[in-house]
Length: 520
Ligand code: UTP
Ligand code: MN
Image (cartoon, rainbow, N blue to C red; front, side, top):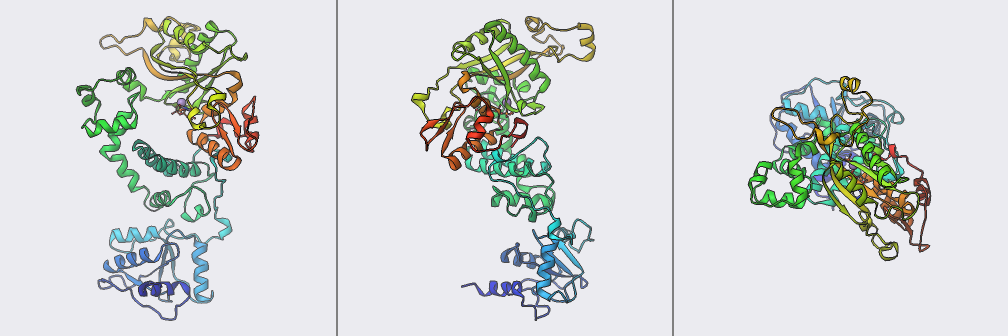
């Protein structure tokens, strides 16, 4: 049973416009602007929001009509295109009656309420009276791994806000909420044009109620109040700052915040003993929170290459992570190392690390052994296989004058500048007043046997959401489990081998997406 008041409102949506000019019920000031007669379209706005806005306007001295009639001068709607409102009007008036003067978007209404008077109408307020067929209604496949997402983003204002809310959810250990925002964000990133109206989003996947609310707020008001207030909140700032320390996760940061630690100074003043990683994180805080450039990544490639040539000729390395996707900056540099002969890579990591250490390139390192065994680990827990490679988390000491990094003047005087090995030690600690000659850079090294290389390459190229979606696709759509080690087909009960990323996409029944289009 629909309540009485709601039934009355509903009747305005079903063509009952015989009664010209029933005014809204509720608190009402005398009409201050007799030339403006507003009608709020319930379609998409909903009855309760419409009732609320009607009363708000009436309180401000605006004349709002509950029922549509020829007296109406301003039709205001929300999330509808000009064509949609136009056809609604036609259905109300058989297309023959007098058309209202203005078909307006909610932005005109909210700004007028703020101003306390009907503001001048501009093109941004007016609903475009174009054919529905001319309005681009976006359409994309559901899984990010079915889509091509380049670094060219036409909706940065929307995606910045959603990313920020995702980050806050992740920092608060609310993984589900984080993923929901990341998925919504990824959908907007692959659109080929900026979103200008809510109606364009009809039919897009992964846009939940909350994300839509954020988008609508931005389209109407230029910014998301939720994202803005999150960004300014003490908790967000403290979580960002503390998790910005290498080796500190959101749980530790949260514990410290509850103890009243909100700054690095408070952390170092506190009695907390930091582990080796966290101590390095504090020592190199500024450097590690400064984006790594592509030139710096290339410079580190040269160093790692040199290490490999020395300790195991024939071993190869590939730049993975964001830089492989074409990003110009990153939070770290990731390398995947392998050798064309299966088994030759065993024991390689400790030798690479010793060489780097002996040359003074490492400020910190922690190596984990390869613990993946197909027979034992099998397909049962694919996600847990993600970090089972022999892996080295490190902090490099990168010479700012290193190969490819010098300024032009220096390059000219240094000639080829091919030295990088022992050069680092000679320019390390800053002397009084002197600029530091090196910077700390996070570097991840991963070693994979050649048989798992394509899976590792695919798994470590990212983006994180792209990887997550690939695994979701494999599980949901193909009954397969994908990890950075292997692909298992649960129906056939067999591992599917691959010698390239392309073959893995084929096994998964997906079109191949090159790294530069995996920026979901
Ligand atoms: P990163 O965290 O380095 O991300 O992980 P990124 O895309 O390179 O971004 P920036 O530029 O450094 O900030 C790179 C890839 O490695 C995978 C992630 O899924 C991501 O796709 N990865 C990372 C793992 O598989 N396991 C891990 O433990 C860490
Ligand atoms: Mn990275």
